[in-house]
Image (cartoon, rainbow, N blue to C red):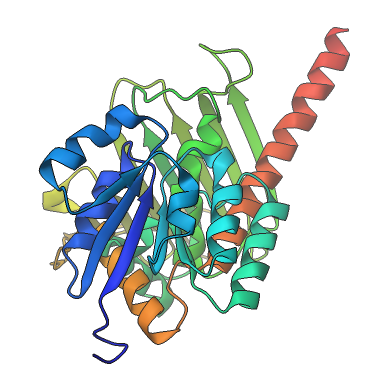
Length: 337
């Protein structure tokens, strides 16, 4: 069997929310199977042993690193990503890490360096980069169909799930930051932030991020665990057309508006109102496409779309936002004192 059809063996570390979803998609790939699952909570593994007895389960993570699996998926809390991914890479395993890649820039840089030294694939779970709707939106931006992009607004809000290990910025904003960098093909020059901790001291549950780019374009990201409605929306404002990507509306996941405003020689503003278009999108589950990219990269040696370097760029933005927030809170504390 050649390398393109070689049976790939995967291990999943972390059997909480994302672990089972990723395992399901890996199992659906041709010439691929999940052969080991690890979690520190033995109760989570009980059902696997009964329903899928051919999969080895363990509460000892070293069992995974010393096994014969080709690749390891890490779906554990953010603070553990670096240690587990590093250990897997040093044991010769390809690695897919749930977002964000790590909890610091230094950690992400180290993982990228190790993966290159070991000649192994390091990938991060930026699932929305694989969304057919996001990719259609990227084509519209990159081709100039929307004209010059003035601004982008994203909303990712709902009631819960509350975390006590990271704030809402590190939990939800990685999705939107990764979407923005993917859509635009560039990183911001400046960041600003406003965030509030309502329910848990020092764990911010609502945040507004402003990103400024070198061409004058700006993006606003609103993330919240405290909102009555579930909203997953990206709005693109171009000088030719506008577009809205709504992940919660399968019937109109992407809508293009032939609307705009122009200033002519006189000081008045004229408005354009044309037809709206809902393009046909061939839908494939983004997580399935993400897993396919991971497997293909292992077989070919080519970098996946959401490779470690991409994860590093997202962590750099998150870290810059967190640094701004820490400085603001330090200044506020000084004023109060």
